[in-house]
Image (tube, rainbow, N blue to C red; front, side, top):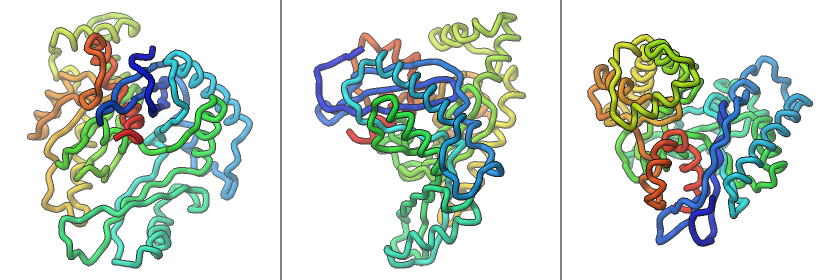
Length: 361
């Protein structure tokens, strides 16, 4: 559904394990304006297709017949989302799944800018999950608060070239121009953190996986991922209410609208590994050079698997920080008649909104 008069826009596409989320934004008076959106639900093996580097044949970045079949399947689903949304531009930014991306912060001696790429490659080569020639590597300098530092802090992100080829083919077959591929971390920073320069943790709870990001000064510094997500919370709800899993989604919606609260203790077992991961991520961040005196000031929750009240309660019990569900629509202009619908889907749209913001913010 198109919502406003036509202007130049930007589309963000988030391909996840359970479907595709698409958002088109346009710029209006300096602010992003919601133009249209779509959510297409379907289980897809996006987190499992590239997870076995031991099966990777060095130098072979061609897609297998099986992968080309998946390209066709994903392209058909994406074309369906495009048709449903009735988008007005083919300019697209898409996200790479966290589970497939290598991400680290390194320190280097101060070197000439023209030599930086060489030093980055030499530093990370042994850390990568597959040969460096089969990875696409990008880096950016992280500014230091100390102007006279004797070292460089460099954020490095790498993804398999085969994965990039896979995504490029999907969008090409769907008739879209893929302008950028970026990690979910930068999209979430745009939609949930914005101009806030505080040290923030964003926890993205999907159906199958939960991703943990620490963003400092507007830059995603760490990210980790565990194979626990919303389906574990759904199992608890199904047992508590003694209903079939098909009713759980409606129960979660009702709870959010009427601020009903379940005893957090019911979710203690599910939350235990998440709490450990929060602690580990914070410890990892604070032990990086230059971060020793910093503290995570707030934790922002998002994602389609997020069951807010018990999660917030249990995190607050373990960590003395402000914990809340982020609103990815907060920086977006939209018709107020859509507010309830957008609030319902907001947590699962955070990545696609942030992706669409890339070229209009």
